[in-house]
Length: 349
Image (cartoon, rainbow, N blue to C red; front, side, top):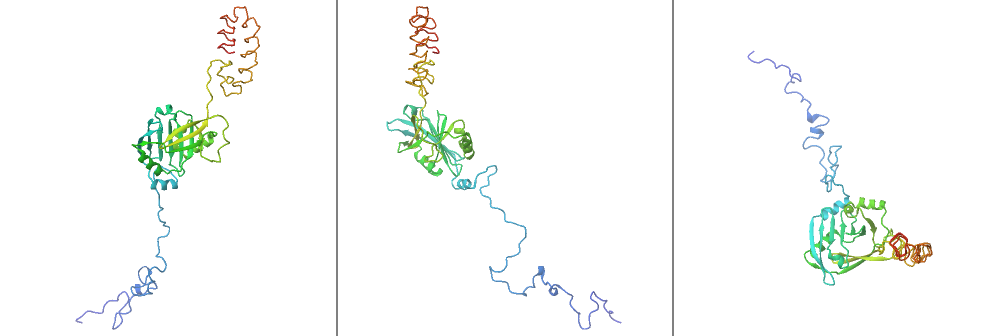
């Protein structure tokens, strides 16, 4: 009376006399006290010294992202080439200069570098041929880890391929020095271009490894002129000639097989014939030949022949004949005739 009655029983039952009773089990009384299983603050063993102990737990299944080098969409290049292109970027740059030869003659030459790693040196002045030099484009390909140089004469069906010891940067620096000046010859190089041309399989392999040179050598034969290359064949034994090619401040002299001499006649088997049996030919029956159709031939219709239509022929139509087609005749078979069988004839025999 005059007050409140006894409190209703709580969640844990009535409080014991004189106190609140036992504390309900909490986080500090659990077998794994603390948040995330860690002991309460200030309790537990001390942490290990800095830099020691197990690494912190990480998220399983995650790997660090790969490091991508020089990732250019749509362009595949080897790692070595990527490193080279990062160190020395290829740029477009043009150069020109005047070339002065020992006799005082001058020509204009030019060069350019490309973003694909090519350096092109062009000597195509029309005066070069009169001076005894060959109009040429020299292509240095630095687009691969193993650079090569291609010498492509403008009026020739042959490309010459060799190695180069100059780096891309060295050639660029030389061009920047020579550009706008007058260059003179300081060095000469001699190379052997008499080797056998590459096979089609070797040519395709070269174009696959150096695709930038296809434009300059696609429809030409390719000859390897790398000095002391074990793939070169035995030395050439026939007649040769020399190509003199200007290159910056140097002259490159390449020994090549000489072309066959051109004869002077329109006949087929006469002494001045243009076929393989003529005196100026490199065929099997050339000058002084004893072959059947050569100048000294014993063939019946040769220049000294005794056959029925030869110069000394006893045939009625021969040179001493009294027939209308004799030696003084304008008929078809006389020795001075324009017909087809006289010894001085322009016909076939």
